[in-house]
Amino acid sequence: MYLLARNMIRFLVVVLFQILVMDNIMISGYLNPYIYLLFLLLMPFETPRWVQLLSGFLLGLGIDIFEQTPGMHTAATVLVAFIRPYLLNLLSPRDGYEPETFPRIHYYGFLWFVKYTLIIVAIHHFALFYLEVFQLKDFLSTLLRVILSTLLSTSTIVLSQYFVFRK
Amino acid sequence: MRTLLRFIQKYSNLMLFLLLEAIAIALLVQGSTFQRSKLVGLNREISGYLFSRVDGAREYLSLKQVNEQLALENLKLRNRLDQISVLMDSSTVISRFIEPYHYYYVPSRVVQNSVYKQYNYITLDKGKKDGVFRDMGVISDMGLVGIVFESSSNFSTVIPIINRDFRLSVKIKSNNYAGILQWEGTSPLYAILTEIPFHVDIREGDTIVTSGFSAIFPEGILVGEIESFSLEQGNFYDISIRLSTDFQSLYHANIIRNYRQEEQLNLETHQR
Image (cartoon, rainbow over the protein chains, first blue to last red):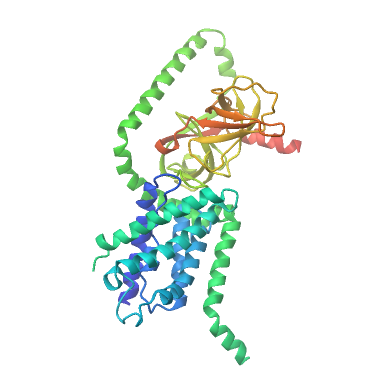
């Protein structure tokens, strides 16, 4: 119950922060930081798969509704929610994840967290930007947007670990 | 039966994933239906309220810029007033009384604005309560802004020029040739003008204004000027327009109510 309430508040905070603050500091067409993925990234290891998928869906839908974009955040976020458990398996340390720990810098170190965040964010941004353009005409310029925005989002998310989500 | 159940159990997550993804893609494909839905309409009210609160701070920071814009507009209006008072003296005053005015401007404030997406939208703080409905034109003192896409009771969503769904008939001021204004999604400063045939004489710096064909805008509202053009192939120019409206510093916008829009549209649909 406590966990649920905590997660709902975190959900609200992340969505509001994204639409009220981050959306105002899009630096140019090439740099759009999307940090709302934090919510998904920080979910506990043992979260049931269907809960992850549904929260990804709701998270994306929330952003879509506020940004008045049709479904593309939803599609991209559901995709990474589906991939996340496999990725966590792939990145797991030699003797697995310790119980009672969370996917955070605090537990698994800087390098692990950057790798984890970078892959998730890259997949998400790739899906998102290509769904937004919805054609292959501007393939290269879209790719540049994906790469630059991925770097910015990842560094913002990693930095937030030191300032906001400190243990 | 048991194997079926086991199959479902085994792949339940995959199936849930596919289901959710299918919903998302359906929303994407049915884009405008989603954006016209009740859910988004309700959200327009909520986020409009939220953004107008946050915007207080943003607006304070840009007071100086807004002041300059307003001063400039004042100057322009004063100039026009002088011209009108000259006209009033002459006999045209009679025709002014015979013809009732047919455009009315609703001033509004921008509460939400995006510039760097492919499908940008602007939210204004005037809605149905203020008589703002779908398909009304929106301008600023800098020039053309966009067209009202949907409105709820207190807020309205505008499709600006810098949205890839935007289309409008505009013309070159010097020779009255009309073409279609649209946006390619690359830069919020430029748009493109198509369907100007190759034999038309155009120059860099030519002014582009609204054509007045559409019943949405009055004729002659500033859109921008020709930045560059080329004649790649075929019979039409590729013209790049530098937009006169700076969408990044847009704080005030006027919504145009055309009292004769309905009449004109009725007539036009009868003809078809």
